[in-house]
Length: 139
Image (tube, rainbow, N blue to C red; front, side):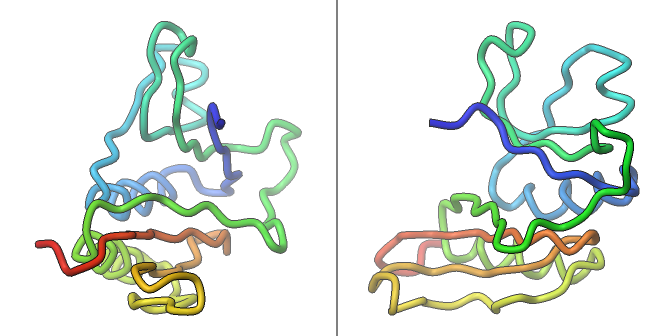
């Protein structure tokens, strides 16, 4: 359904450190396009192959219109986690790298009996989540 998601940032280096830390527990690797101009203004995690013909990635970078990055009210990206432990590690990493808690790790029974999630705000105020739908705690 999706090809990519892109969040604007006003400080690419800080954003790379933040997202590198929070996406590592979720098993997401950094993808490099090989285009020096693009890789200078943006960074991505996920899949980027064949010059973007095969892409499923999350990107952060400078806004294309060259205006300051801002938060979209009501916008959120939720990443899939393989375990509840990965959700916990995502949340800890976000707080350790300057993010803020927008909902601690835990079950969200109002969504489903197995919906385990954590919500954070990145350094720009964007809301991101990690979600695990495992029925029990998996190490």
